[in-house]
Image 1 (cartoon, one colour):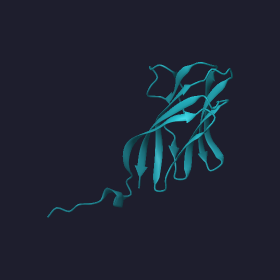
Image 2 (cartoon, rainbow, N blue to C red):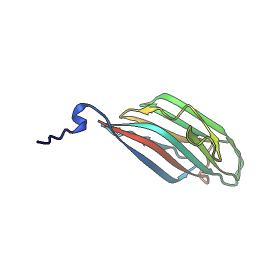
Image 3 (cartoon, rainbow, N blue to C red):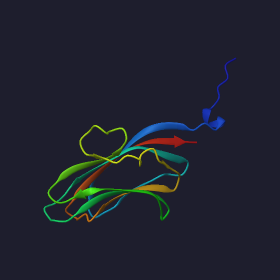
Length: 140
């Protein structure tokens, strides 16, 4: 007789890889990726592509992992000035690709209720950005 066992009954997390895309964000608006109840996210990579408008000003792409209002981890990218279309990679996996690589942020585990926030410090309403986050979703 064959007997089946549900792996989640053993307390072993089940995982799947997701790619989450948020396109066409205004440069002066934050993007928040919240971890839902019953899941944990392991950050594999995050890419932010920022297209600045013609107005001069310094912009910094910033990633924050938040536990409520408390900053769990933060990474601030290099300055982007004006009239640039540039991708910022936050990943250990993409070290050889175009863009600037920020190691050390990926691999972080975000628990239920925590969030990943992308902020373009100094971003203007005419700027546009896209976020592509690759996460390993751990479900219990």
